[in-house]
Length: 320
Image (cartoon, rainbow, N blue to C red; front, side, top):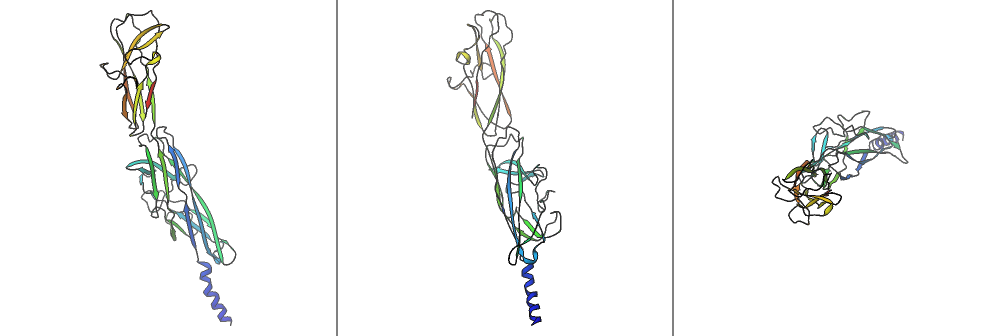
């Protein structure tokens, strides 16, 4: 009788100790709208949830999790930047294991030095013959700043089973340089949306100090447009305070005026106006870089008013 009881205990021991299984899920990381012209980084997070079960004799044991993250379907442009893509257009971002976003979350299987963070849990005995442990890790994401040439569009990178090799084992190791054990996976996606955007700045037109207005007086200013790559835009100049035609704008001092025009070309043959003068606006397509457009001004010969300072205010409108 004693021998049969001893045999029975030995037969049960493996099932009490080695029924170890871990399951993983990762929430999607969505950066939302990203303004690539601002130069500011955009942050987001995702959560890795971990649930492990084991046998009764696994209670109190330390289980090590090594959650490798590969480059994702968008790839990686360098050791410091993963990529999301919209068609063939890239957007650089990175995933970190710390809230300060300094430690890149990597993998033991990719070509860069960064490795997965080590995460340890202790198995706790439950009722019956089971033990279990649960935990979570935060993935800290950043879309890197200073990407003005990124095109407008919806960007994604998918982390499939090949990019999420999550090793787990009973181990006293403190790092994930060479992970081993069983492997679980948890596919998820990273996404962002880059909206078409434009910035505009101006340099005033100053005709300087003049005497009698018996010949043309020329001067230039500029409009600088910075738009996301591929964004089409139109720039119009209104008629100034007098709501005049492009070549008949008025600088004024009280009730006295000086007539002038603004043009698109150095020959002053193509007036620059708005929708009130068909064909007088300037169109362009953004590259992400600043595009300088010269405004050519001319004061034609005219009856000279009394001395003083003559000014006008022209509104620049960039439509995209």
